[in-house]
Image 1 (tube, chains in turn blue, yellow):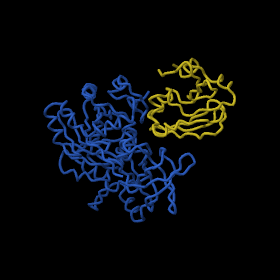
Image 2 (cartoon, chains in turn green, brown):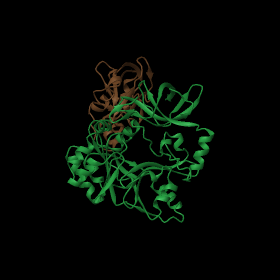
Image 3 (cartoon, helix red, strand yellow):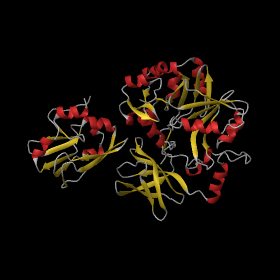
Image 4 (cartoon, chains in turn brown, blue):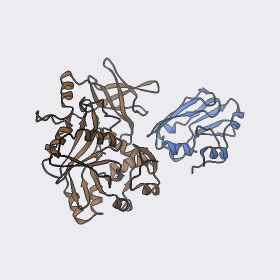
Length: 360
Length: 127
């Protein structure tokens, strides 16, 4: 038996098909993964993401330590309430994990993947050194993601006046505390929406309110197809400790300036850039019928070979799409091997759908 | 608990087979199979004229989640494939016992007796 979130019993009551995800018993879907996907793109839905790891970083040197630990620069968070996406790298420039960092009034809140919790904590503790920094894991918090074009509007009608006002005021990539809730305008679907951290004992009641108001519960299956369409990487699949952000369509999340900021992995990234980055992460579109899957081989004529890192059927596009790591010289055509047969695919920027709109 | 029609025969690999009055055998996947697969998005159909031995791979069903092989429950020659599944693969989810995949002219009807009956399949599923 895996770990359970505070919403486990509700998932069962809603007819969820449960699966193991990183040691947690989580809902895969509540009937139809494809319907849940469409619901988020068209309207909105609620995901239980309480399995994710929340760490608050406090102490006099919290900022300086995070500037050392992370490839992005928390200096960019000019005031409390701002958030940014970052990786933390090992000395080889490989990705230890990716996360969202929120600046609170007197702390930084890091939200990580669930499956990497142990290695992340071990890594962070090993980097503490003499810094005056404390790490507080907030395992007592539950976390819900409500995503979709109608998410903020619908949630604002179900919460207190002060929270409703906050939800209306939040700009993308902002988050703020209200009482014992933390409300952020972030997500992992390519749609507008919120992520809300709240005390575990309040989570079942709130989740029930949302479902009662007609907001569909959404499982991890649709979470995966939504994030692939949005071109968002999944740790352990598209990115891992042997690839750098440069080879992962994530160069934008590296803060090179100021040049004096010696974050972990910087030297390796600079060397990789100087030598010429060998690979890139691209999108693939299969125009024929079939489904692209992770680990299928990609062949690029006169260039070489690559590999699919995430492949799926795209409910929005009604065709199969994938993220793939391929040689840098790859142009706009490639082939993928499916069950011994080679299929032509289009190579595109790895953002297929955003805000309900097709981009390819 | 899944739907298991009493008049059908089942393979342990979750195909159903129905002996028609004209002596042909219609093949599909069980309600349990479609449930386990989740949303079906693509069916790789075999071709009319192909000859399969019992248990031989005779197509692929791809769901959002995974690809799953289909096996011929009995030996025979393919005499029809369900082209509707090319455009509407989700029929396997909504109507697993109506949405057949292919029809065989069996080489040995006695092979049907080796398949599970409804009670046997139910027991195999542990239901």
